[in-house]
Image 1: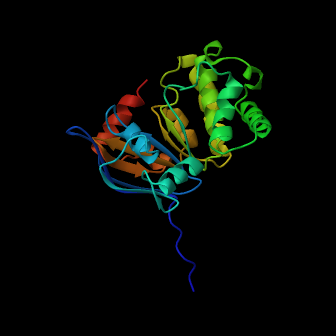
Image 2: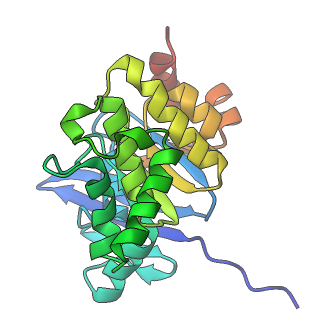
Length: 250
């Protein structure tokens, strides 16, 4: 007797999203397994950020279905719980509370959402500040940190909620060039540790290192998808070839 087939951890089925008359996502279907490292690229306005924002319910899709761990992502209590218990997100902007210290920013979620004891939450926060290599900054406020340090705090904050999946929405786009590498190094270490991640980025060198699957979007559709080796060396679609020729040009 064959073992039962396992479901993908995230399933998108014919997901569409409109902003007024503009179609940001056009019947997108996608399966993502636990442990997968998916990097999404494409031109501005192609639907990349909208896709991961719909997964995290920051945008409401008008058609289709999104499931996480076979639970429909919607506004029901179970839909909200499956997001809260499984998905962390890091944004282009750091979205830290400016009036709270770094440590206070990190313990807020575990204490309020997970009802964790404050002492335990502090230990957890310091663990993840160590992991992103800035434990000495715990007592400072966000404005006292560089952009790269603030983004590493944002990553640590997401990790404090023990997500199974991390979503990254162009995490280096708001950073000065010299700060990009320090953030990408932290994300690369997370990938090496086995964290499931979906990352929207234009950093193609990073994508080659981290991704086990590349996805190219244009006009709200998935145009091409494949492992990095073939994606970068032998793309099939003319649109993907043109995009890569432009973005990889020195």
